[in-house]
Length: 222
Image 1 (cartoon, rainbow, N blue to C red):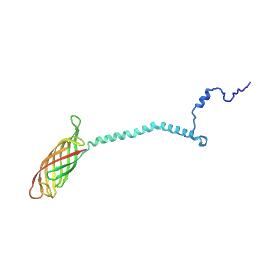
Image 2 (cartoon, one colour):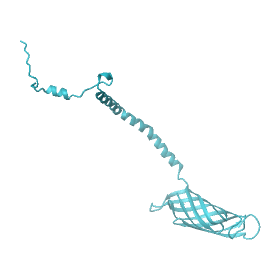
Image 3 (spheres, rainbow, N blue to C red):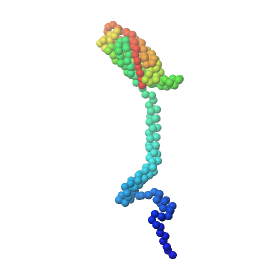
Image 4 (cartoon, one colour):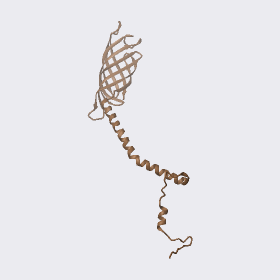
């Protein structure tokens, strides 16, 4: 015998299955026609698909990036090690016995580069090339230098350089428009350099064939 049990409205029995079905997430195909899905649900479905796609392929993207970037970084490091230490650029100003106030610039080219025993200062056996210009003329100095440095400070050093001096028409204590060649020794402490030497004229006639050269200045390098 078939009989239907009916319940008055508002007095339906509690059913766990109905609760579970009500809490069950709604799975909506992203390919469902837009007219069949409310806007909010459609956006939710599209975002689920989009984030699922990103999560799915993220490990592959990371692996590809590592595969590409690791050899490039290794090659860059190897290339850097093969280049060796770069030259140290030097600029400064000094008062020169013949040129008077002088602006200077140059390079310290490392022949041997290391650290001092306390591993605080750089230790450079360098080829020194500097040039200066002032009211009394132009000067070029090339030679060997030993420097303890903590860039930009040239902490301490010694140098021995060959010099070429070309005087202007108004040098101090030298023949005008004359070329001098000579030698000079220098001492540096806390970026202050003192140089002393001599020079002999190789052009023209007249007084001041031999002159004493000296200078006092300040240099920094990096």
